[in-house]
Image (cartoon, rainbow, N blue to C red):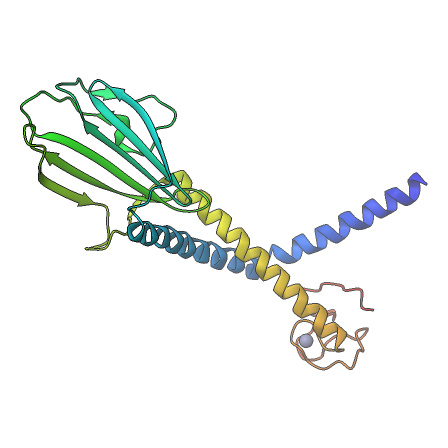
Length: 242
Ligand SMILES: [Zn+2]
C-alpha cells in the first residue's frame, strides 16, 4: 500500500518538477515581466479610478472615525472601499508639535506628525487622500490655512496630484508593491489558465499543442513543424494525450 503511495508521490513530484522547469525558461521570465508590468498599470488605474469616483461622491462619506481631540487638534479618518481620507485641523488655542501614535492613523499620513500652533497664527488644516485596492497604494495631500478669528480659508494648496485632476501621484510603498504583486499574480494565473486551455483544445483536435500544426492525432512522432516531442527540441514537455 505504502509502496503505491510512494510511487504516486514520486510521479506527482516529477510532474511538478517538469512543469516548473518548463516555466523556468526565458519565455516564463518574459511572462512574469509582462504580468508585473500589467500589474503596475492596473494598480495605478485602480487607484486613480477610486480617486475619481470618490471626488464625484465626496459629499457622502460612509464611515467617520473621530480619532481624538489632542492638544487642540481634531483628527478624523474616513474609510471607504479603496479610499481613506485623513484630516487634522486646529480647533483650540495652541498645541505643541505632536506625533500621533494612534494605530488608526495610517503610517503614510502626514497627520502622524502635527506642527506646533500658537493662537494668532493662521490655523492649519492638513488633509491626506489615499486610494487603491486591495491595499491603499497612492495618495495626495491638501493644505489649507484659516484666519484664526473669522475661520475663513486664506490659502489652499494641493500637492501630489496630476495637473488639475485630483489623481494621486505619491506612492505608499508597501501598499503599492502589494497591489502590483496581487494583480501580477492574477494576470499570471489568467495566462496559465488560457494557455493550458488552448493546449488541451489543440490536443483534442489532434493538433500540435505548441504551434497548432495538424498532426492528425499522431503525437508519438512529434511535430515536424516546431520540433515538439522530437529529440532535437530542447523544450520538450510530455503530455498524456487521451
Ligand atoms: Zn508544432
